[in-house]
Length: 321
Ligand code: TXA
Ligand code: MG
Image (tube, rainbow, N blue to C red; front, side, top):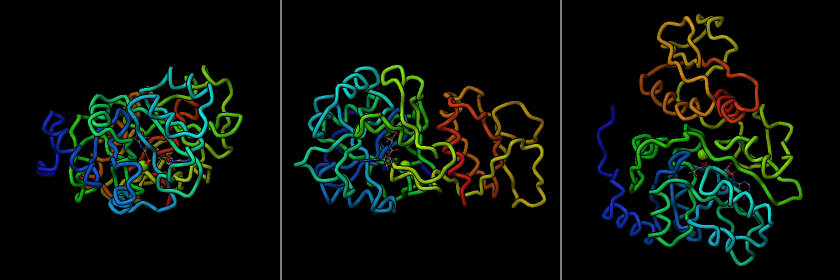
């Protein structure tokens, strides 16, 4: 649908060299991670961080995740590093878990006036090569306009952010949904954003996890970025207990339908019934339906179990007015 963009480059030696040049010049580069594509900037360049907020049209109160290449680099950003952070890092990094910790006092806030910092080591060869080649901690929110669907391919990035200077193409993101954000600032580890890494896996290390009451219903919560409307396609998204029961007369046409099981609905996109596989395809499916020009996306509501928590969270937000 879109023309190939000259901004999308292969992550070979030349592509990486160009990306590092742009980052060192305090501008921004989109790069692949295993969750979604990130819009990367030198975490401690005010100019580069300003560029991230401007390109995304991101509200200034919403802080950024910092990506690093190894645990030493992560520790260096923090004021204190609890043993639980070591255990979680050993088990899940590189990977889709972001830890929020007290920020080292000599460092500036990464886009926010708080005293914490969110950090992860991404499990993507291109992201790791970029971190190593640049030698910079890279702040990187998802590489999309604020509130719209996160990108899982280089093409999604260019479509959402046509002014992005450069995108390293690492193919489709394998997890397809953002990292799980866990705060270790207080005694009890607290979930700030459900995400790719299931809570069940995290509990094996942490024991109990504090869950804000509102975690599954899309209401306010302590992770500042969890605004109610987020992750939304251009089309109106409607979550239905059974898409076959919805009165279509009320809906704007054309209507696209997204289910996760075989249902007798003409033209439905059917995603896998496994939550991990569903997550890997969800954003790409929403992008496809948007590109097809539908005005309404009817989505079959997934089961109300913890395994579907992150998916239900994203769908609820995408459906919020
Ligand atoms: O998978 C991901 O996490 C992707 C890839 C690119 O790494 N990044 C991503 O970033 O989703 P973003 O900016 O779209 O989401 C970051 C989330 C937001 O909800 C933000 O409010 C929260 O992390 N966050 C960042 N810094 C924080 C902090 N210091 N304290 C609490 N929450 C924080
Ligand atoms: Mg985002």
